[in-house]
Image 1 (spheres, rainbow, N blue to C red):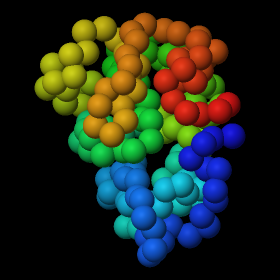
Image 2 (cartoon, rainbow, N blue to C red):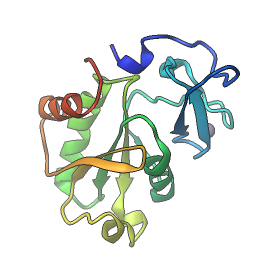
Image 3 (cartoon, protein in one colour):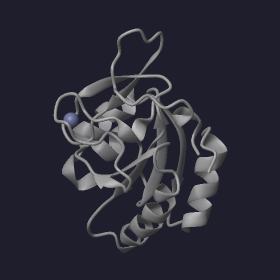
Image 4 (cartoon, helix red, strand yellow):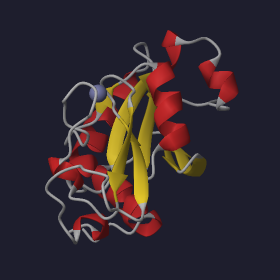
Length: 164
Ligand SMILES: [Zn+2]
């Protein structure tokens, strides 16, 4: 169970809400303002209608990543990878297992650093693969190299309010 889903809100309607949280749609990059708390797994994007909390890591463009890293109020786990990197492929599987344990509490994305030649410099990515966590525009954590799913779960658990 996740703290942010403790009090379900079944419609993503801002009326009457005192507090809001931003979540960037990973499919269209629209910034959604959601009630807090909300049952995030039930919320859909106001622009494209797709789910805001995919249960598995999805590949996004560097632009979408940058926007989500800047605005997301819930933890965003980012897998910086490249197609030529064999260990990147190993990490993908481990991250998928780990992220599924935190469905509804975090979002996980993969960004191909080859898609933007400035990305590695901008985010100081020296080693592939690198996992990092962003929340409210701040990078909270990063780790390079392949880690097993249970170790990834441990560090997500240690740095979020996810009660999984
Ligand atoms: Zn959308």
